[in-house]
Image 1 (cartoon, rainbow, N blue to C red):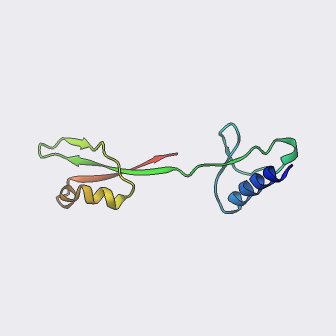
Image 2: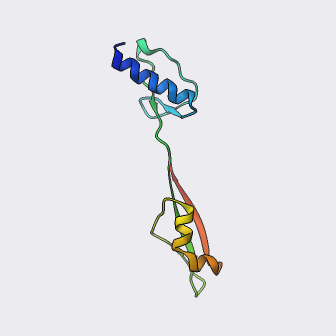
Image 3: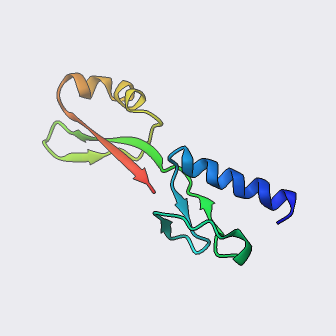
Amino acid sequence: MDKEETKKAIEVMQAYVDGKKLMAGCGTDVRVPVWNWESGLSAYKVKPEPIVRYTAVVTLNNGSKMVSMATFDSADECIEAFKDEHEEGRFRLIRLVED
């Protein structure tokens, strides 16, 4: 291993120690890594954090439900955008997770 490969290996191992998830080169999750860098079997990457967004289902005056097409970075942001519906009890928060 040269210095650059060693730096990459250290980054992956440190991420594992810090509790981050790893994935193999083919994209499958790795539960227990095998640190066999010389054989090329340890082509691990740090799995990206899931993207979490929020949206809402609003009950309209006629009783039908409408899912908002807008998404928000936080639950508070979503609640603020639908403040009137939330206060009237016509609002349901939906958490969207893209893994």
